[in-house]
Length: 361
Image (cartoon, rainbow, N blue to C red; front, top):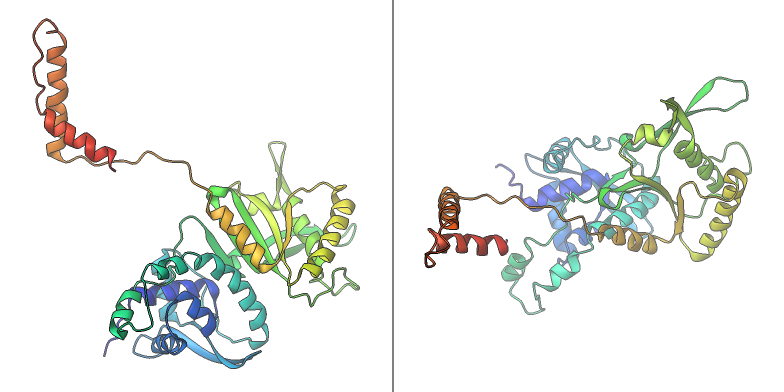
């Protein structure tokens, strides 16, 4: 029996293609209004059949043993076709140790992706005594959509690796370096590109040895090297490593996502110290230190930036085009006959109807 792939299934594939891994709790946010058992049943259906879209693993979270889902090759194909671009291949191995950190980053993405779903759910006017079949019918098109032309999210993918070169030892050879943000958010209409570093508070603020690359100060120095370091000179103009990687002109920023306000206060002091030591207190690019909730709220303000209105092309039917031609030919003929009493213009009613249609969009 052939597997029926619905529009909801395709969008779940598209979202999972960006997230890499998903658990049941995050799936419930993508499919609001459903009971937990209904969501688990929907996910399990995608792990079976001739065209299996999801693969399921098990991991020990803080709440106990839970499932985690990623795409199969078939699911990856559905995601690429839906989003009309090539996504990074689905993970082949399961790293249970990194799941808590991963889902922390995923929650930022879901905060943007599912922002409008509560209002959509409220419009369905669901109630406890509703017939189950009617409830399913009302909910069938209430789910998160994967494609969002106004913004793009990339999580720890090869395309978001940030390469540069530097001298690690004075007089030594140039060494290849790279950064790997936890996620990158791009909002072209706001002219913003945000590099996201999700910090759980487990790493030190200042590196206490040479093998502490995840210390906050070490991250700041690496982002400074990438965003402001000179990659080459073209026509007497310095091209930074950032501009070489992203020639689109979007303004870069770094967001350090911290678990508590207390941690934020300490990190902000480190940022001030780094700016003073490296840039004499100036801020060559924006650095924000925020809680997860405030990070999402800030990004939502970016997405509310209204794009400049563009003239919208309107197709005319052959009959409407012919009416306009006759109407303006009549205007030209009557232009030299001002002494004559007013005469109705040809196709005047048709043109009036056309003008009304254009005004109403």
